[in-house]
Length: 287
Image (tube, rainbow, N blue to C red; front, side, top):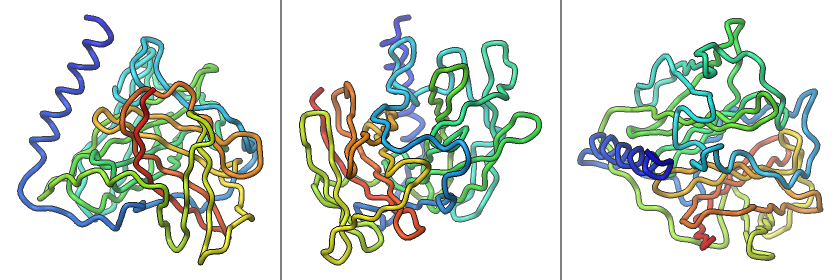
C-alpha cells in the first residue's frame, strides 16, 4: 500500500472513531482565542536553544506522511499506558517512545529548552495545551493531564533523537456528551487574557505577529523556552502537525516553509511579565 493510501485509510478510521464519540449535546468554548495553557510557567533552563531559529519542527516524516497523524513513523512509535480520562479530573498520562526493536528510547536531545514537548488539543482544534512531561528512570514519560470536556483529543509527542526531529500522535478519549464545534472563522486579530494579537503576511510564507495590551504595543516580551515565541500549526481534518520557531530578527516573525494546502488552526504562544499566553487563529493556505 502506498504512503498516500495509508494516510487516507488512517484518516477514514479516525473519522469513524470521532463520530462514535459524538452524541447529542455540546460544550461552550471560551472564545476564538481560547487556550488552556497548563505547564508554561517554567523559564528556559540550561541548554535552552537561542532565540530566533526560523526552522520548523517535523513537517513530514521520511515517507512523506504528515507529522503527528500516526502513532508509528520513521522507526519510532508512541505507546501510552492509558488513553481514557474523565472530564475535569486530573489523571496521569504516561507513555513511552519505542524504537524499531521495541526498545524504550532513553536518549533525547534538547530542543527549545526541553527534551520532549507534548501538545494536546481536542480534535475540533479547541482546548489547546502545551505540556512538558518528566522522564523516569525507566525511560517512560509522564505528566499530569486535565481534559476539561468530553471529546476525542490528540496528543503530539514532539522530540528530537539521533539528530532528527519526530512527532508522533495518539488519541485520548473523554466520554460524555459532546458535539464538535465549528472551526472559528479566519481573522487578523485574536484575544488572549487581555492581550490583542494581530497577524499579517509579510510575504506568502512569512507571518508576523504584533502584541498589544489596552491599545499599547507590547515590546518587552520575555523569552519563552529560549525564543521570543512559538507557533504550532494544526491542519483541520487530519491534524497534521507543525511547530515553527521565530526568525532571527526583531519582533515575532515565522517562516512557514513549504506549507501543505489546507485550513489550519495557528496557536501562537508568547510570554510577558512571567506568564505565558496563547492566541489562536484560523488561516487557509493554498500551498
